[in-house]
Length: 78
Image 1 (cartoon, rainbow, N blue to C red):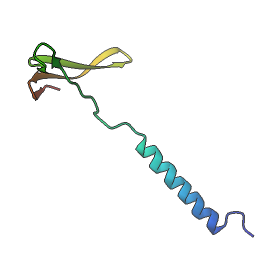
Image 2 (image 1 turned 90 degrees about the horizontal axis):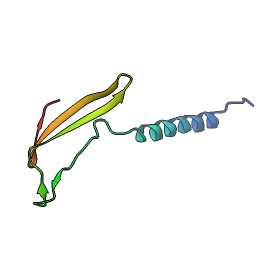
Image 3 (image 1 turned 180 degrees about the vertical axis):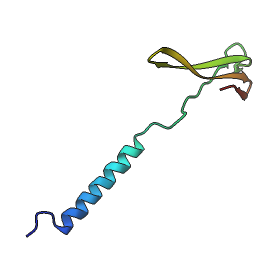
């Protein structure tokens, strides 16, 4: 009787497939940065606020994007 039977090949294939699916679902979504700026005096979204996003790299902090907030509309500069 062979060591690696057809049934064990099917189980192995299923195991590899499930590992692939699980690892793919654990990846963080790309570009998943969000921000919410509230003007607490008015209780509304703030206007005219620049939001900067940095990431720490090997040479220090690096700007990866910025936005100027106009109410509910955004002007993307990066």
